[in-house]
Amino acid sequence: MKKIKLALLIILSVIILAGCGKSAKEEFFDYTKKNVTENSSNDISMTIKDIKLTADMKDSPEANVMITQLKDIKVTGSMQHDVSEKATNTKLNIEALGQKIPLEFISKNDDMYFSLDIFRGISKIASQFNSELPSDEKTLSAFDGKYLKLSDADTLEIDSKSATNLTKEFQKEVSNYFTSLDEERFTKENDVVTFKLTKKDVVVLAEKFNTLSKSKKEYKEFVIPDFDEMIKNLPKALDVKFNLNTKTNDLAVALTSTFDKKDEGFIDSIEVLYNYKPNDKQVAIKLPAKKEIVNVKEIEAILAPYLSDELDEELDEELDEELDEELDEELDGDFNMADDEFKELVKELEKEDFSSFSAAESDELLEEYEPLLTEKQYKTIEKIFKNK
Image 1 (cartoon, rainbow, N blue to C red):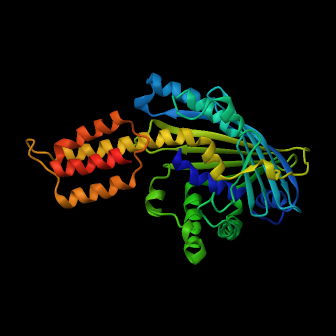
Image 2 (image 1 turned 90 degrees about the vertical axis):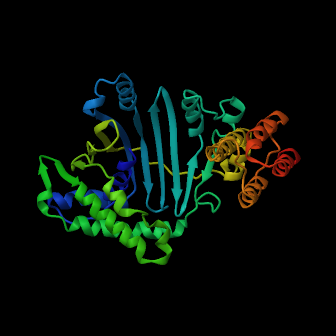
């Protein structure tokens, strides 16, 4: 599915293109311009129409169960756009694995808020896979009705102003590209305008995005790393079909991705349908109240008991891997760690916090280290484990 993400991002840019005129092509872009320059409210939905398995996986019970679960995923919701207030509100309901998960984004100018109501649904799904995410009512209720401000400096690792400027410039690039396309690629039958997007278009637009990202110092962080490899790993074929009803302004988008047989995945192709239908539900977009907004540190405080357990498990795994590597080098029980290697090990261990380790856990780790250490080295490690 990761291979589809780039195509989806570019499709979103297509939806907000500007246009002019009255040919089939121009009618399509009239619609997109209207959605940007005027207030709008749309019902939106996403369903997976079809997934085909590779020949060697068609008879696999496990793969077919997974395909059934994927096909059951549905997304419904609405999107509002208030031009004068420069605000948008997107509300979605995701149905997956027997759960309904609410997803909401509210934005105004450069500020964006993300509803944490999603956490309750994610926790229920995670519990089906024996995840350590909290599921008690006290913890879950702490997220109800709360929003995370994504534009806060401690939330995003990117410059939101640079991201906004880059997005605006890229939209112009996309607009210019589609304006230059042949009229023949846009057809009209009755009231429906049809336009098709191909993998070639996706690659051209991706190249334009990367070139733009390299053009200014402020955009440097958005340059796509390993660009050629990313393009190489796109699906073998990408076909996107847009059907716009110019009378009702309903827009249907069908995205079909076909994967190369050389890929190691079990999916041969997947078809996803998106629908946008205007509604009359336009209401004032309300930003979260100050008391409803939380920051990353507050979320970390709520999850601290669960995060600490997870970190302890990660540390155990790291130490076990390190021990395994050392033990692999041991020859006939005569191996002892060199002084310079031991000094590096001590530096790394001194950075760690072993305060949560029980005496039994410390002794168990010491027993694993003992065959690798001299008596003097062993005593040094023992002090680190037992004095922290």
